[in-house]
Length: 253
Image 1 (cartoon, helix red, strand yellow):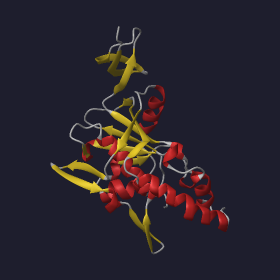
Image 2 (tube, rainbow, N blue to C red):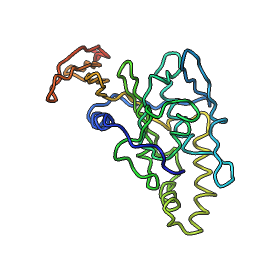
Image 3 (tube, rainbow, N blue to C red):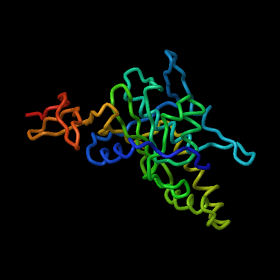
Image 4 (cartoon, one colour):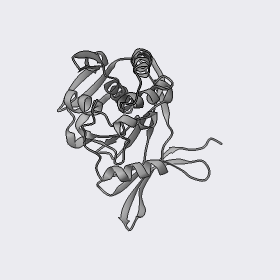
């Protein structure tokens, strides 16, 4: 795939910086179906991985690993909504996966707007991607909540990214191309499509500074073991004052 989506908004810089400072607990979830529900305009649409995973390249139809990655990440996001339906027009997406897969799935297939989808600023070039780049930030506009979904290393076979870079950059020998196409890529496809898909992605709440100048922090641990979700008002010059805090858990005595 060629890289076609624009690089991220200015807000993404703040998001990435804050995510590295304050994060909630990461949870690995089990994916048991190939469906995800997207809600827009009062209507719900169920998308099936088997129907959206294909692409045509050089006249050949094949499974698009990038769209599969995006789809599985979206399924993890769905676990954060009580009804399991993702409110499409209320969700912004940032990703470090700099191929066309995100745009092809989220925009062209599922109807997200281009304005609600972007690569993170400074993201890795598409030819050099590694497992560290297989992440997605999902931000809910109305609440300011944000989640990061990250693929785990064993989602792809060992050396997949080494051989992928060689192939993508035109440096691979014929033997290396053959090994990638006939051994590594099929194994990656099998891993991505396996059900149940167990512990192959992590999801966690992350701190997010929204356009309303409120810093939302998913978890703050205080002395004594109490954990709070907190919102802070930005008063200027990087000074924040507590707006509200909700007890998340208290250490058992």
